[in-house]
Length: 311
Picture 1: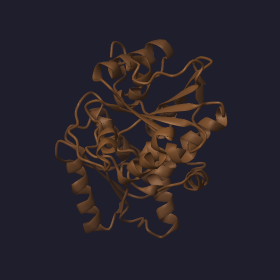
Picture 2: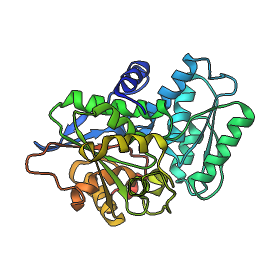
Picture 3: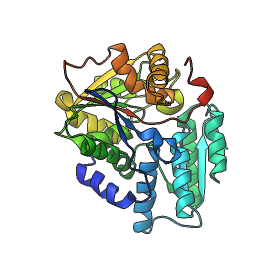
Picture 4: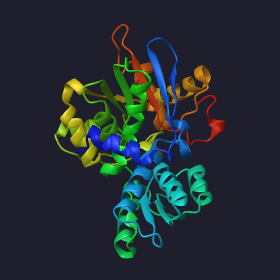
């Protein structure tokens, strides 16, 4: 399981490669961590750089062969960007259902894009086979220590900006961001893990006591569509327990409404997966106590801008 030490090491390693994104104070008790302003439009760039830089330090990154990643889109974009900046090739496997805007961005970053299967799991199997055959560095979308620790740096920034924040709401897909956030803020803030009702990987795992496969679908499936929560995310959630972590579910209509409100009320662009965290507040899935200081991580905005008005 990763620790705050791992997150702090990731901060030092990735300094100069990633942006320190701002915290926007919407009200006296509500803040937004604007991680959509990160390179490539999502928090994923943090873990991508941490994974690739750490591998280069340890002699595990072959500059001629490069990296490979399986992704619904965002992790592939982040790793392709990091690879380009570090001067190594990138091969990205994505499902056939990946949004066209994300596939186009992958191509623009110089990645070799392979579309296969209908779900992330099929792209994952193809990517792991490619890594074994070619010797490429495998960069997991969420379930690697360096990936999760890199993501956790945003929570270090958040509490440095405002140490009075008591609760952090974070959208969960495979659990890498959740694991990083929990490691960074352990003992300093409560974390609320928010998932779509139609992709409840962590919620189901906590109920079963172990990661389990779930059926996934819905508006946020392109970014929160992992069929099974990662081992690192599950371990972090289990260790946090009820005192450090709450797990809630939100509906597709609530996610759509929250995404529309983020744009109409604050001009914050968000993809559906990133709007899930805000949906927990708007829908009442998470009800803060009076005066509770809340931060919502807006973790990505790789979406069609024309769809922001009216959901």
